[in-house]
Structure formats: C-alpha cells, structure tokens
Image: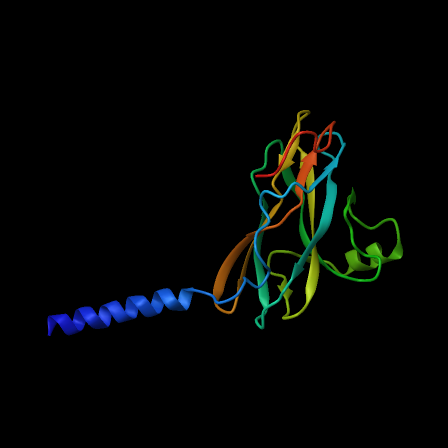
Length: 180
C-alpha cells in the first residue's frame, strides 16, 4: 500500500507544479529591467514630479487587479505622490512633468480627472491604462530607481513585473547611469 501512496503524492506534486506553469506571457507582459531608457528631470529635493508613459496592457482573458506599485532599487528618491492609473485618451499620455499631471492640454486634465489609485485598480481583458507615479528626491544628491515594480493578480495567480523607464532626479539627468 505504501508505494501507491507515494505514487499518488508524486502525481499531486507534479500536477501542482504543472498548474503553476503558464504557456504564455504574463497578462501585463515581461519585465524590462536593464533597459537603458531613462527619464530624468532636475527638481529640488521634496518637489513631486510626475513620471508616466508606462502603459500597462492586459493581454490576457482575465481581469488584472493591481495589488501594489513600488520603485525598483530606489536610491535618494521615494514615491511621494503615489501610484495612479489613468485611462488612455487622445492626447493624454503624461511622460514627465509637474505634479499633478494635468497640464498642458485638455487630454491630460480629462484623464487625470478619471484616475484611480493603482492599488486595487482593475484592467479588463484587452484594455490598457497608463501608470503614473509621483516621485521626489530625498536629498541634494542624485535620486534614481530602476522604474516601477507592479504586483498584480489575474486568473487566480499573482505576478510581479518591473517596467521601464528608469527614473532619475538630479542635476545631470541619466548621465552615465544605466538601469539594472
């Protein structure tokens, strides 16, 4: 009887491992750590800067729920304005700029008015949203991170993805520094 119990146990363990495997990319795509893309801006310590341009596209058939957004490997900077998802509208892509990211142009103001805190926000199958984080330097030295890290769930699984661009705050934006 003992060999049968081991065989059933081995089958259950194998089934658990196989069910954890995916035959496609994660719903929000793969991580982009190590890319040389870098958004840099010169602002004094404590001033919140908007960093957007990170498009989260749900390519799965399951609804994505964002659990958490943090900065990857932050040094001398922190997320002080929070993490937000806005709809993608005509002329609404944010890039970098003032906080809150409402000007210039009516597209940005309209999208910002429709914002949702990233934590708890949902992205339906086939839809996209722009992630915007508000970041500031903690002191007078360089502030940098490897970009936003998003923890989310979809289809009963939890995923973590890091997206570029790297975020750099200081006197010489992105000079001689690569993410990763």
